[in-house]
Image (tube, rainbow over all chains, first blue to last red):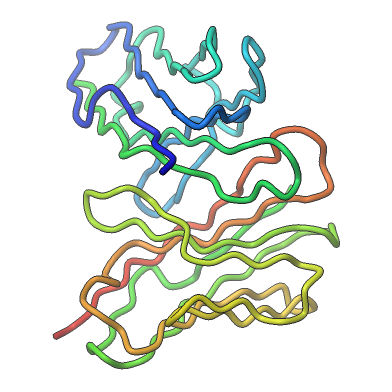
Length: 114
Length: 117
């Protein structure tokens, strides 16, 4: 079974702190994604990566950065956390190729910024 | 840019009955994929069913089926014989098959489905 794991299920941070959210997948997938999920807004893409050291901005990249030094790991970084970044963060991965359809999700990290 | 709209924030159904969740999308592309994902409370999001736009036949997975109307850009999910375990947030999603690269998913707002015993 494909597994996508995230470092924390719940996280509480203070405004201005630097926050790292880690995601690891074990299926050698080329593509990895970070979303945030907010009620009434669905999932919105923050950043994605299609290869090691490659990254692309999603729809809402402001206030976030990412790192992908190894194929299996994709990190989301909040340089200076703010209260409007309180949200559920979901990581996902998918194999390469047009017909590689299924995107696998991690369990999510619920981040609260005080 | 593509958009996906789920106009029903919440739905409820009696156990063993049938419920249909609505989804519409907007795209100028002709080759794409559509998905329904399920997110149970406090559990991981999983794929329920997928549809390839070039296929006219509606996809079916056990009690889950879709009504794909390409001209109307509509992609509804029908759940038959609803079970308590079907209670979840359901997301409709779109992915282009035409664009090179990672081909991101575009999600709707979600529909929370409650099953009444």
